[in-house]
Length: 116
Image (spheres, rainbow, N blue to C red):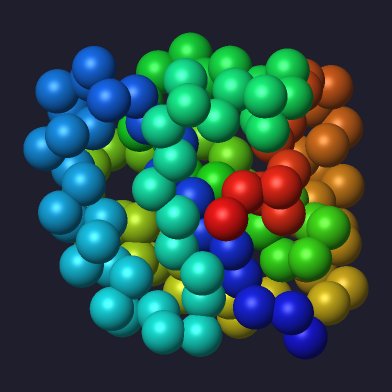
């Protein structure tokens, strides 16, 4: 099974994002098998396609081609950690179902495979 890609989608001008960055970096140490990315949406606009967050910070989690989660979350490390753990524990079939539900919302979503 492919490892998770976990992205925090933020903007450099956002004070909340700047304050959250060290906490997100600390999460990276808790998930050594995952790739955690800090993404400035303005710097990565071309790679994010038509995706534009309505608010910050956004947690996006993807395994392979399956985007499992993409939404704003409060800046609480325990909440982010629990959600990442839950998504990491999904089997392949459950991950595909989760990704299908998210895709069915019909809004542009990012593909984290384009980010590094």
